[in-house]
Length: 181
Image (cartoon, rainbow, N blue to C red):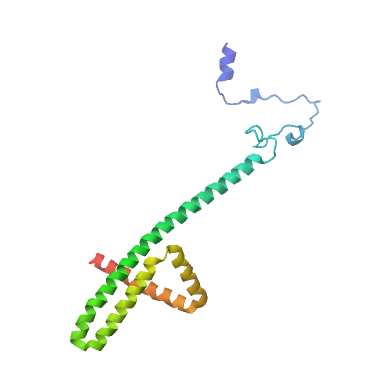
């Protein structure tokens, strides 16, 4: 009983525990495990598909592909929601700009003359038409139109992107300046 307890508790190895082989003993290395007929691959014994080599790995790869596809689909749905929200906000802002131009047209009529007021009304009509076009198209249609514009005239697309970048930078810097004040 005492010997059993001594074997069950972990104790450090001492020199007395190691016994060298007899002087006349010969040593032959064991055969490699891969040749011993024992399959130690991760696939062995884990599933019913163990008859097929690599089936667990294949299953894991397929599960990973499925999860990536699911994540991509969720990201696309979320991006579509953000794009729809951005489209609605842009449409509202353009509507407000159109109304602002219409209101300003009356003041321009009074101060500069009816001819210049007509320019402001024409600009308001164009902005309102652009707003209506945006409202009527889906996000996918708008992306298709943008891609076609970039293909037809890449220089104009770069110019518009630079202009928008400048406007956004000015708006952000103005907002940061107001926050610091």
